[in-house]
Length: 292
Length: 304
Image (cartoon, rainbow over all chains, first blue to last red; front, side, top):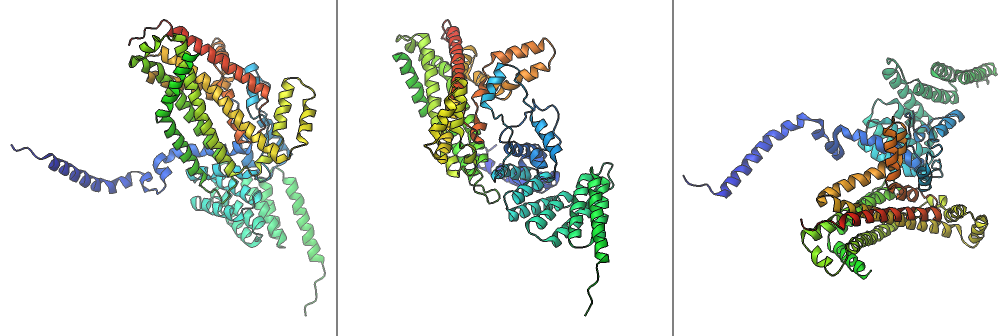
């Protein structure tokens, strides 16, 4: 039997490999979502990237505290919300005190090693200020790349971009990106509305966006066992304020009544309702200007 | 001493002939510069993420250089049988150990200087922006803290007087430089302990690969968990609590020497007294590990 040339065998094997590859390749696309993605990170890490996204989101909070941050050994209970994230919500002195208490994690040193080691650590609880908040943004950007479905990342980054750095355009672009990735998120729409009202000074667009946010909330949350009433209150109260400014008092009152149902402080909202009613009465009793 | 210096000189030459340092430096520089070229939300002033990544890479690279260089020294001499003419010079086993340690440690120091120069250039070229304001009084604070340690009551007044002649910008720049120098110094001291530990591992364990692996696990474990062992111990029942707490007191606390956070977040420089005590701590542990290495090595058969 004649021996085949090794070049011919190599050529045959390459041909078979190519033929098998062209046959299998279209089928592999259906096996996993990874292959469909154009995103390199998604292809490499799959859903595991969400775990890293949490890490980078937390890293942004570490940066916000200039490195003064509890480790998993210091943290006895998981904090409800990071200071960086709660910074964007309206919060009172009680929240500040709770945050201070939460961040007083070091306590007295247990031994001389711990006491001496503190000389080399950041031991002062501070928050970034005066434009230094920008330092948290790279971590939030990376977090959003790794987990585009994490809504907090977009709203937190947009808040700091808009409120502290005056980067309205960048904040809007980032929120729009978040909206594309999370089309049903009422949180992103709410933040977008704030950007239009406070940043762009465009109450009409803000109203439209918040109306949409309210509809999204009703569609998603109202049927849940534990709806996110905090979000509903924020949308309703902000929208009510816009309606009041536009002179649509009855709509403002109905929105405040809606917010009252879910508010931890309904008395304050009732006070606002009373004030608007007062304004309504004053407008009705005011003499009408003669029409010419 | 001449014998020690001669052996250490050979080790330093070996490091710059090997490719490890160049590869790690190029990788660090490449990753840092690539990250530096990324624009986040069109803000060119963002710098801390770059400092964080660059310092992390420097720490990883320095540990790789220190551990891989040290772990190979004695096994390679034994394997190539070059240890016999070396010890017949006459060079005592103690001098041999000391020479190897000094060579590796100095080589790490040279590598660190290059790495930190690169870090300094990158972070300063990026601009400290507003962050320099936070560290304006840092030098004064370090002097003040140092004076508190030394119980000199008049030091605060002295530092104030000193600052009268300086602009805040100068003070800020000096504090940043002081932070970098302290970070470099403490890092180098830590590498001294690491080098001595790995040298001990290389005479106790059978092969360089084993000592490299175990050293990496041990050192990274200490860096990540060392400072928390006491908290872990207190949550355990006896006698586990006593065992873990004993381990906590026995291990060298390498995490003290990691002051990256202070550099990244523009914290005031560490008091000189504390820096000196940490240096003393490192010297004691280095001496202890070198003594143990000599103790094990002095009666060890050199043939494989």
